[in-house]
Image (tube, rainbow, N blue to C red; front, side, top):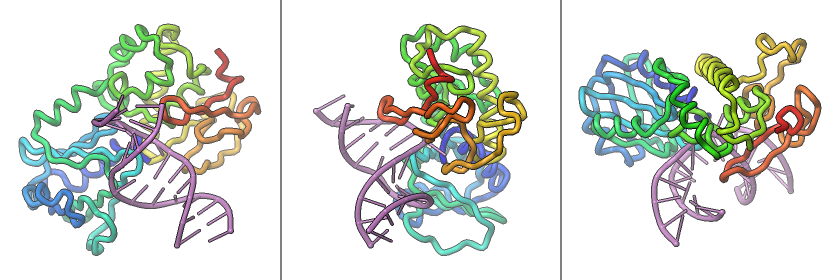
Length: 269
DNA sequence: GGCTTATGCGCAG
DNA sequence: TGCGCCTAAGCCA
């Protein structure tokens, strides 16, 4: 589940459900028990996301930093709480709802300064108000790395994961191996604007849909259908299946230890 | 029930 | 480049 849209959606929910009130904090699994004891009953000041990172600020200087990694989940439910099942790293309890964190790569208590240091290492986030495509362009336009690499580099742009990468490149007819240097400015401007819309849509719906007949004239009449990840996409995890637009078999290759998907016809160099 | 895979990423070497 | 993290879902038998 977790690309940037997931974390921003969680931040929004947690801000609404828990912020500005005392929160019960526990770690049934025990791995976050010491920190939970410190925070239990304290006021959650703010929940926010940057890229794929989630930050819960308690009081002024204590920040819980969460990164879901590949398979972490943060579920919510209405009170009353169920008895913890399985490995439950962190549970937050508010007045009406509670939230359970399982399997995160990171769940740690930091100072405000330490949390800021993490954010300083991240590139601009398309889902934040201060998103600055110009800063991203500065990095991309100077790079000899392929776009497939650059879009997944959280120092270049944060929040983009394997699905958004594949889908963005498809939507702009770009060969994933195109280098940053070779990209033209107009195409980047269009990609950046598109990415903001796609990711905001992801936050709203809680899933990634990139096939949008309403803004893609080529897709008029396309019969919507969900793929196995729950959304509707052009190429992600569709290896060997016909491209929705041209019918060519979607290809896949391992790129820097991650699966890359593209249509060799629509995305020819 | 077991095996594979995964929308991530830091680290060892 | 490959491993480990530590979880759930999909697939097969």
